[in-house]
Image (cartoon, rainbow over all chains, first blue to last red; front, side, top):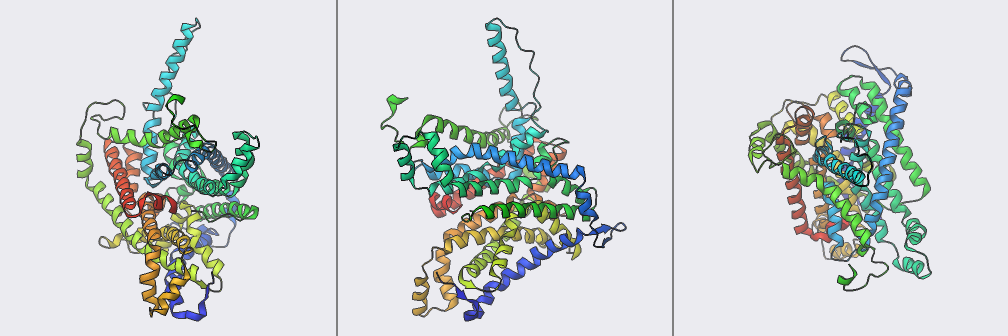
Length: 301
Length: 280
């Protein structure tokens, strides 16, 4: 497919390029540039920020406290991505090999929560995980059952059930992020598995490999680009997550986005917030560079 | 189990094996149970979300009579509609630009256009907060112009998604159609309107659905761009959650979930389940 040189049809080129370029520069490049410049500034007086070219904000970001929060954000995001991959891979397999009639509906089933409001989904999960929620009710029933079985076989019953603290801690943050990001993982995995040449799987099975071995040795390597795409699509938003740690986390579950928010809404230290924002963006760039270094991946959808 | 099966499971029919079905079933329960519980309890005649105390619509009544909440919902829908409209235009145009032309710095332009997809929401929010503060964007305009800052922010993160969807659709366009149209005397504009747009239509529907839901969904960027008079639905629900969880939130959330389902149903009606599933 030959692309047209822009000089051959300048009028049409101007018509399609100017609106896009103007919008992108005015409302994306310039705002980002402002953040970048502010990150080298310092508060001078109540409403004035002096752009002094200082590196103080970046230096402060490397303090143990903030490095710890960066590290923790990465750890949480990586754990969430791993859980999404383990939970999502079989689902993507099931969708790929489902019958023609079922496949679109299964896909829709995965996509509908993704279209539902994030805040509503987080709130719904909070109801389930609360002290009086169904998760606690279910655990209580399980506890009671175990206790009953233990008395039945002549052992000491378990102590009385105390409602588990499932909300406002790190567990809740990971659980919530998995809940929110699972569709992000399943969809690219499905896209990759769908393109797979099935005769290779059949050949592997015919030659005596078991299903598990076939999946590990044939399906996973062939679907690697899709797996990497899914990992990136899950990891990047999870790293910058604000709402889930804010609403479901405890005092020690702050992630980097919460610290940034605090600089703007409460601490009123815009230059430091700007520096943290750019550090987060640089982290994204590094992740993406690592990915593209490994292999060219197909377009993400 | 095996007695009821009509045909034996072929080796590749993974989705018919029992443990696979259980797994998918469990994931679906995980995804949907919280939402269904929320919807059921919005009809519960109790202050707390615990025990069922009978059917009531009073929280819907309360939510719909809560002026701030209704205003927030209207604001959100207005912003989403405006953002979708402009995102479709910008997205289609930029997709054509990147698909059709070869020009200097194309890689840089391409990268910059798709950057809002990967830049974390919190950073975009911060950027818009600083930008609108710096240019002293007027905040005391009459409705709907007071929503302009939020709408601009939403368009900026929505249109790259439209570009992405439309561009992958354009890749399947047969250039001979373009030549045929030109041979038959169509001008550039006519070619665009009568040949290219019909080809892009499925992607435009998918892109519209995507930007509408993205805009309606957005909390973080809006949180940084909204003022005291420009509250959107997610921002309002957030403050309700932070300060006082009332069953009204359940009712309002249910309304939003139903809205999402209706939108999806419309898109399905327009495009069929296969086309929608494939564009994502």
